[in-house]
Image 1 (tube, rainbow, N blue to C red):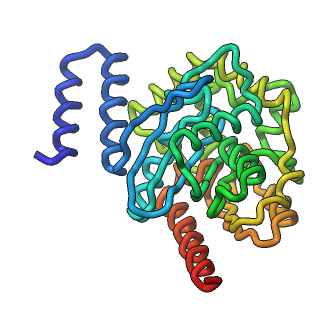
Image 2 (tube, one colour; image 1 turned 45 degrees about the vertical axis):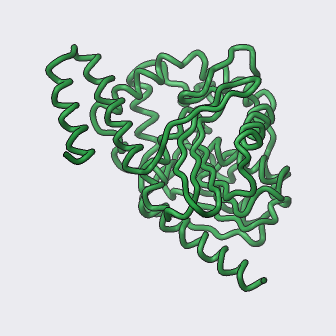
Length: 315
């Protein structure tokens, strides 16, 4: 029996052995394990002084690659994207502090520099150096901070709809924030669905029961997410002041229809990073690696190939 058939059989049996809510949660976790297995990922954790950090690892014989998700997301946002990344790369997808399966510490301040320190400690403990770094949204913001402060660690940097800069054109999210609302912290199913609608160009790529379980988790963690957001904006650092330090190869990917961080931000990055390579994806929202994993990975692979070729020519 193949692995996929085995999981399908397990799901079928579960449908006749559990109640409704339990069915959704159980199927969700079985399906999640299957998704990770299909991408070659193993689930792991690492203990630090301040946090326990959860991550997915796909071993490979070549260079290390680190992937960071956005605010409210988790490491599994990269699972399907990684299927299209060559097996030679040794890939790590981390849950940011306070996110996913990483520990949530009520007495920790989740500002960007504190989270960057936790990330740096994680990298040091796992002895990941040097590496390709890619981040989306908050993960892109954190990646910018880390790359600017530790350029010797970074082989290349990929920013996917990253946060941290002031957009020339206001997005839907920014306008909502100016009215005192925070759509990033949904407190009921209606608010969660609205966030999903604005985060993706098309239908959110979450089949049943993934969306239902994700909605419950988001709503249940609303208070803690509100705390993290408050910590984050209390010590906000505008990334424009750091972009000139990014002297490594940099790729910028943006979903043209991003309603959370407007595509006009591309102008800011192009102004401050002369060597940057930019790719705007048509009919795509805020999370390209989740909404269009094959296309986004293809763009990234081409960048990695060009970076590798340039390095060989220099030597």
